[in-house]
Image 1: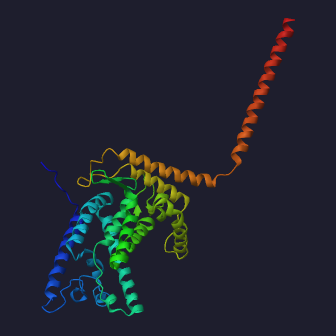
Image 2: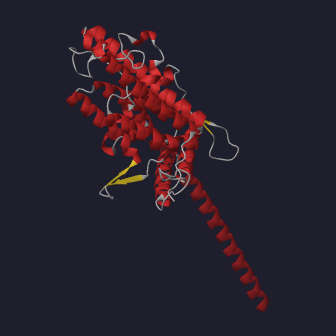
Image 3: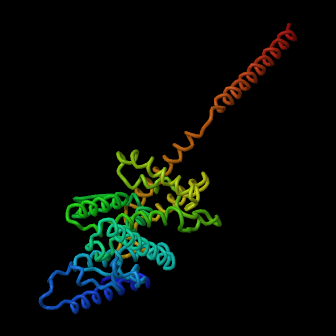
Amino acid sequence: MPPRINIPPLTRGLLVLLFICTVLNASLRYREWAPGQEASFTSGLYNIPYLVLVPAQSLVYPWTHLTSAFVEQNVVSFLVTGATLFFGGRYLERAWSSAEFAKFVLFATMIPNLLAFGTYTLWFMLAKSEARASTSINGGVAIQGAFLVAFKQLVPEHTVAVFRGLIRMRVKHFPALFLLANTLSGVVFGTDTALFLAWYGVLTSWIYLRFYRTTPSAGDGGPALHGDASETFAFAHFFPEPLQTLVAPLADAVYQTLVTLRICSPFSDEDVDAGNEQASARAEGGLPNLMNPRGGRGGGRREEAERRRALALKALDQRLGAAATRPAPVAAAAAAGSSAAGLTNHEAERNDDRGGEGGDRA
């Protein structure tokens, strides 16, 4: 008997919203078409401004900052977004709870859409291009990037194998590849909407998880943690190691600017230690089977946990080594001197005792 597929309530609702918005948009676009007009569904003539974001028209429809993320224009993108919500949503909703997952989805859809809306409005004002003003901003690209960031936080060392193990890749590399693919597509094929939504989705979701999301402490009865201060979730770690040395100074400068502007609070050493502990605790769970998120973690869970723990310990050792001082050798020398003095006194006492015994015998 095949296993029963159990979909959490919010994930189920998001899938229904995706289906309804996409079908409704397609139906309304078809009704807008008339014989003799341009038979291209990419034309601005067929945009539905009260379902998708259109810079020149959607200002009076604020709800489109949410609904546009669930409107797809073709079958392929509809299937990709549907699979993202089905598999990723089921795991994240169970890992975080429905309420926390709802906050994350709202943040990962509305903020990127708002930023993209502002980008195209500014583009239109500077270039005086009517095409920019009538651009349709829609699709689940921002959600896809946000989900990859969430998995990068939860299970960065998990290895995904496709094509019967021919291609193996760790989850922590997915966001960088996602950004690279959408950037190249935007430059080569002109899919600039996906380019902006991909970058805005990754950045805004990382900012939310890094600085604002509240999580319970890994220890029993400990205080709640605000954000994720673990060193392995720093923005530089989203990129391959050769690029991390280039990205880290830029990311640190942006972080210091945000702290100066009081947009986010600086992390203390205790926050970093708690974040590393939390990251190690998350690694113990591994990544469940996507068709059965509550079980079936597979044989690689222990290996994944060991890799994750080793990274956290390495980062902690580097910090402790940089902050260490040098009184320890002096203290060790003093202790060794005291031990030597004690040993000398003990030997002298033994010699005196032997001398006394010799005198008695004489």
